[in-house]
Length: 506
Image (tube, rainbow, N blue to C red; front, side, top):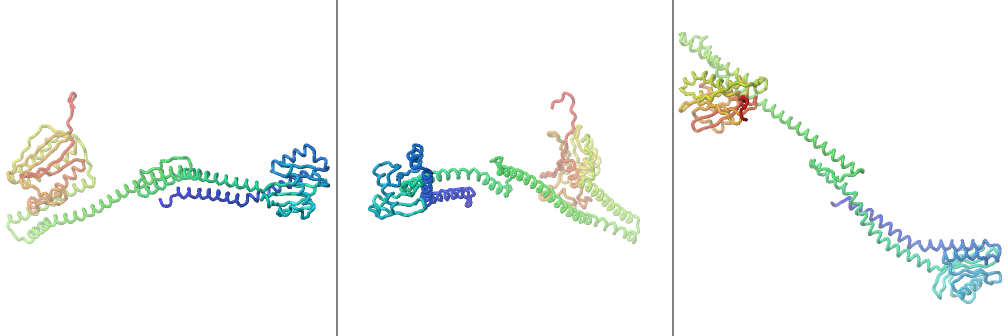
């Protein structure tokens, strides 16, 4: 990632650490020596205050004062310390070397006298602080190239004193301190970089996981979950992300379900509108011919076109026949309407199917004989099924009537009943012309007629097979049609209803 929070956090902490170390090192280099000088000045002044508290010169040689002065000298690296009486005789002299102490006592005498004596040209003196009782100065020995910080003056006892601290040791200490700080800073910076990187990774990894999770959620990948855990704020945020993901998934699922139902309702409404338009068109078309015939023949009777009894009887027969066809079509339409809209309740019962088929065949024998057709029904014995007996009788009647009206060639109608896997399959086959393949799926549609001229010839309305389809759908059963070279077979299936006697094998 170009702008990684891990890198930004690590660089921020490393930058702060680096600035802190560099600043510390710079402050040490610039101000440490001055600070040391200030501390040493205070040390010399404090030492002066200690010895200036002595009231009698004889007390300078007491063991307690000498011990205290030695302690001050060793603690503060005072290399020269001398006290002279009014006659410039040595009262106290503290130094590692006697020769050097004598020379320092002589220098104090020169400071007191304030003259330009021999040896003073080798000293460069810079007065830092001047009081009534003492002078604080910085002295450089040109010959030895050494610096020292000195304080000299007069005590309350009338004695003279001088103390010196070498400045070279201060510089050396500052240099060593800065060198050590540099090495320490480098090691601390290296360790800090590793530690900061690890801490940044530990802090930012959950945040990066949440960023990736939000991206996947934006792409509707709701199986993505926060897995790093934790009880801090980030862990709680991750848990809330998981809850939000589940809520969004459930909400989108509900919206999709509602949208699907709405789409189905819209499609159903569109389909109903189309069916209504088609229904009105088909009904208008189907009723137009019989109404026209009835009107025409009724006008003929009224105008007495033919006065003989035979003609009037023929006119009346045509009117009655067309009225009957219209009545039959209206009844079928009402039946189909009740089935399609679920207004006609399905009564499931167990009944014997063979006798029902036999009764329908006997009713259709006269029409078959008029067509010169031979009906075959190889009765399989008693066959029980679960279905609505009245509606199944209507299905069988429609199938056999359809077969009688379309039988041709050998003019054979064959009805069969077969039992397979708990199902009972009833088929009605008639010889004749097969149905065109492009019309096989359309024959179940209301008012659809494959051969309109022939359908009109026998008074068909194109509703019978639609009723069959609606009946079978209402009982959640299958029906269909199969083409053969010499004819067509219509079939439907029902659940078997055979009783099992005790001891029968399952």
